[in-house]
Length: 376
Image 1: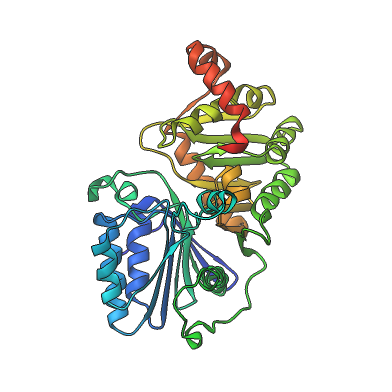
Image 2: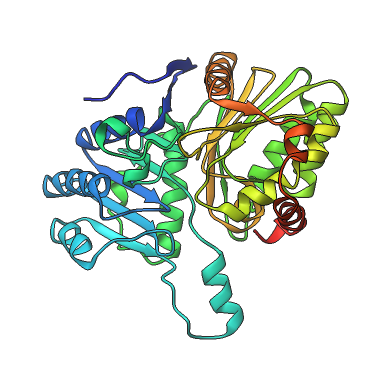
């Protein structure tokens, strides 16, 4: 049974549920899978053969056996699944596609392109009408502590309405491009009319590679009162960083929650290399303490909000396949704002004194890593 979401908001005919952590997101996703009648499309960067991965595999297999067309797309670099795990899915009729398997053959340029360009999206679409996206992968790290997981802090959104079809369209485009099994096209003819206030923005390798970055830049440039960011990996490209600082200089209250504990230490050190310049322009910097922070959200003026898979770094905004939901609605934006303020209670504020108190080696490594953020 799904647990109550952090917030539920209606935007026109679209229903949005803001989901905090795996504790809320996983039960809602499994409930949606169980309700599928025609099709399930599941896309993830990390899929593991662990308790969470097996729960989802069992749910997908059950619906496939009942005649639902089930498509599973997982990234070869990010995932860790056994041959037995995959065979169990395929024996149940689940159509499985590994995104860009790691192969060291061919021209060096082609090998590097395969290695560096990953599918970082997290999306579940059921019957083209209910969809989920955000930061959660499928592994024990994201499950609640009560369920034996790592309790990582993350945010997802459930979308019920025509916008789910746009997530499905992105999934099917990747599926076809990378030679997934033939589709029963009749199962995917969903309505296309959607709310102008809810948009699905996806990065592609060639077309629209910078749409998510452009959405952030535009929102920051138009901000009048506040910008509140929660980002696990914060190495923004120059244009994004510039607009954030400009907003702070013109009097916008800019606050960012970043990770104090991380699974990628070099990225944390590089982010800390940016703190001094952020503080000088008036940006308030906080570090989340305790469980690992993995969320990627933003809210501007309590009117514009985004939840998605894209980090504010070069890999997400230039290299990877990503997807974000962007919502221009006060009700939803204020819910994201409440979530941000709740998270502040678990943070320490970064001050110039805290920066100066770090050891000389850490300060040097942070400075160097910050200069190299384009390649991290």
